[in-house]
Image (cartoon, rainbow, N blue to C red):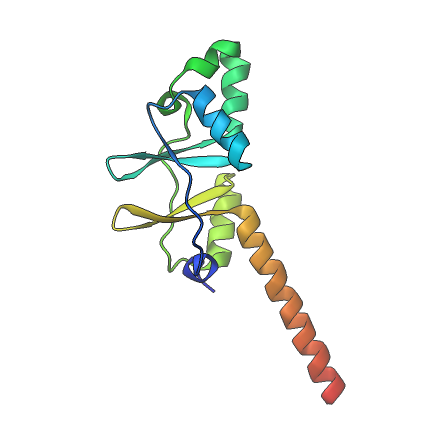
Length: 142
C-alpha cells in the first residue's frame, strides 16, 4: 500500500504557514486546528516543518522571547518528504529512523499532501485486523 492510497479522497485543507509567521501565530493555528505540525511553505515548496517539538525547544532555549521569533528561524529544515508512491511501511521506517512524526507528500517540488505517523499507524492496524479476520474466516471454512 502506498501513501497515495492513504491520502486518496481527502478533501481537508492542509494547514500551513510561511517562514515569516511568528511562533506565537503558528502556535495559535496549531491549537485552533488541534494539530501537531505545520508545513512551512516558501517559493511553492516545503521549506521545513514547524511542530510542537520546535516550540518546546525554543521555549527552553529562549524563554517567552521565543514566541516572537519567526517560524523560519525555529522550524526543522530541510523537511523530510516522500512521494505518493512511497510504500506505507517504508514511510513508517523513515519516520522512525529520522524521529519525525509528519511527512509532506511532494510531487515535482509541490506539496500535495501531509501525513502524520498516526495516519500511517491507523492504516497498519486496520490492515493487520483485516488480515487476521481473513485468516479466521479461512480457518472456519477449511
